[in-house]
Length: 90
Ligand SMILES: [Zn+2]
Image 1 (spheres, rainbow, N blue to C red):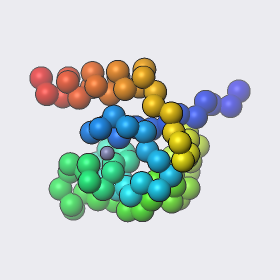
Image 2 (spheres, rainbow, N blue to C red):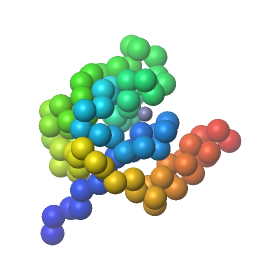
Image 3 (tube, rainbow, N blue to C red):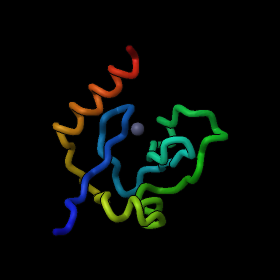
Image 4 (tube, rainbow, N blue to C red):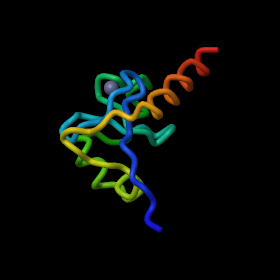
C-alpha cells in the first residue's frame, strides 16, 4: 500500500508550507523551516530554496510531503506540534 503523504507545517506558526515559501533545511534535525522561522544558528543551515524546490530535491521529503498552493492545515498535526513545542519548554 502506498504510504499516505502528509502536509508538513511550520513549527513556529503551525501553518502548512506553501509551494513558493522560502525555506531552509537544517543539518541538525533535517527539518524544513521558513527562512524567517529558522531558529538554529546560521551555520546549521543545510540548504535554501522554495518549499517546492527543496521537496523535489530530496527523495526523503518528496516521498512523503505534499506540495500545494493551497495546503490544508491539519488540526491533528497542529495539536501534536503544539504539544511538542510545549514539551520542549518544560
Ligand atoms: Zn514559519
